Amino acid sequence: MTFFELQHITKSFGGLVAVNRVSFSVKTGEIAALIGPNGAGKTTIFNVVSGFLAPDSGGICFKDENLVGLQPHQICQRGLVRTFQIVKPFAGLTVIGNIVIGALNRTSDVSSAKANALEIASVVGLNHVKDVEAGGLPLPLRKRLELARALATKPNLLLLDEVMAGLTAPEADEMIKIIRGIRDRGVSIVLIEHVMRGVMALADKVVVLNFGEKIAEAPPQEVVQNKQVIEAYLGEDFLSA
Image 1 (cartoon, rainbow, N blue to C red):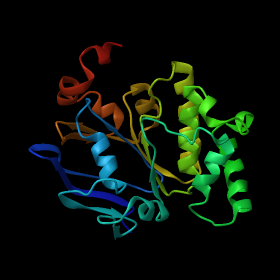
Image 2: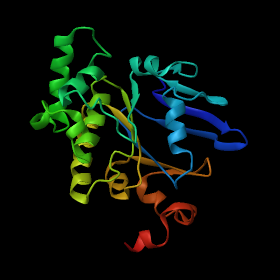
Image 3: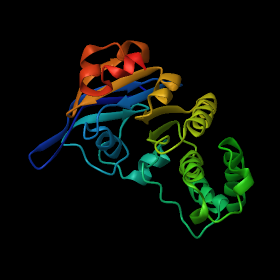
Image 4: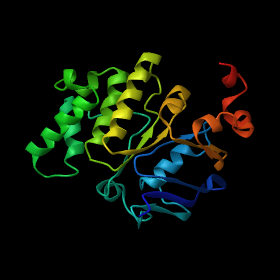
């Protein structure tokens, strides 16, 4: 069975080709990182994969099914879900209420959804604020809530869009531990990330985009030695840091 494969995806906006025939695959239990400069096409790929945008051409194979043409809620129900870089919780609901909304993707029974939500709150370290209104959370906890709400849908593949952006180094280290724990629960992950400490610590392989095209795909230690990747994204200072 093909778990996940992006097959020559192209997406344009007017005359701008944002993604140009990009392909890569993810295996069961794998963490893949999608990196590259701003405007490289990373979030566009997430939008296409999750059904928020239709590709101009190409295929998206997930568990031997082509996802092209499906709506976001249909893709979520099949076990593929994404987070968003700009977190937008339901501010007037409690933390646990937000997670319950995600859990209701898999069941119509509110008691069962709440039990799932409580488990997920523990997994991401939100138990101590589970009854707090989400609108009052600081950024690090809102990031965790965004992750928890997605995880509550019981995904097989989780797309994480810059979950470490804006976090301090200790906060990023805590997020790395949480993501490892999610992978240990059997969830495969694709993450867009500029925090390279997270990429190096988590990724089994790295896909690098530049101007909408894939310029490299390799394990992280190989990617950071790639001259084209250094010139396009990392910079010479990265190797001496």
